[in-house]
Length: 507
Image 1 (cartoon, one colour):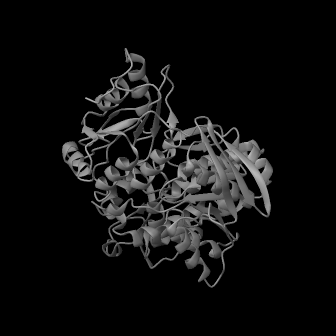
Image 2 (cartoon, rainbow, N blue to C red; image 1 turned 180 degrees about the vertical axis):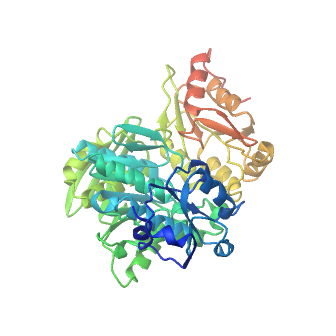
Image 3 (cartoon, rainbow, N blue to C red; image 1 turned 90 degrees about the horizontal axis):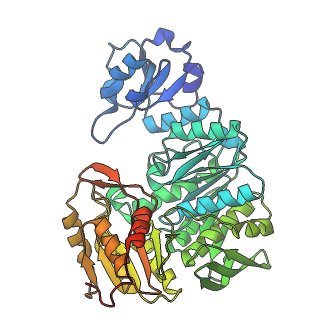
């Protein structure tokens, strides 16, 4: 596209550099990483946490960038660069606007469901996609685990990619014949305006509990970031998006109050177990093979069967059903599709093994998520409930003792180990976790592989073991170095090697 046409989609403060060629430049691609610039790129010099984006401009030009966008004040004074320099008030906002225009606004012609919240985003988006696919509507996926595109699946680099990547993948989905997209929307992405210009048919709010305070600073700021997705729904150019909100969650109710105050009303659908919600679950029954409950919606009752375990998955199912219905799918057919819902990697994922105890791997890495998983497994009446978990380094430290307290409420025995220490001392992280215990039913084993093996080696018949925190991740990051590590594979190997049933008492 011609540079001048792209710039008309966003606010430009001023231009300098080679202005005489700016109006005729044909932009071949967009890029924010100077190492990936190709000939004919428009380069976005984004503000960084360690280095200014402007420090990479020269490298980008040498690699083929033919124009540059930046918000830095010093950038305007640099007249020695022989390409057009576009100064904007907000570089990420400009990048999102221009990316949407460059890829011809793909979200406007796709049926798009965005999912945000602390817990449940991945499962909810997988369920929405499964319902769509089962009902003959080809559907893409953008989320924490993977990106599902026409004819291929990519391992995800971020829960929600940068705006250029989002728009490029949405266009690929549209061109490839997809009709819908299920997309996780993280609070980081909302704060950084990565989904600006993406038009949603429906947005799901799952819940909000303490997480990411290392980035947001407070629960209020964290909530404000999430709320931005829903507050933008009435101001989309071509769609009137609907909000699907967990009415049992405290922040869900606060969100409903905020939306009521908007000058343009947002159509809302609530879900939960409380009386008065639009999609209500009653008479819930749990078993090792799944969950059955009665759904009361639209003045009718439906029997819902799901292979997913736990009360938190009842909420994920409710949100997915309400969203699929809002996207035009017939509710009975959506419910039928859930009977064959897939096992989501790392989300209460059962580890197969010829033992008379059960092992699950789960991504739970917040106090609320860990408590929900353990409470749900208590419904299965295990002989003993054992949990192995740690806390990530260089992340919210305030939740570490809260994780211990959550585990202590429901587990019979707890093994504290490493998660992804990253740049922190693993033993220091473990000490901070241990501060949350009040009883003596835990032990500390820093080596995660050894911790998993110890739990499995000492398992008795009918025990349930939960390995929490890393879920689908296939690596462990220690001292800044990533090494292969897959909880499910490590657990399966330990089950295979276990020579006998475990001891009655924990060593």
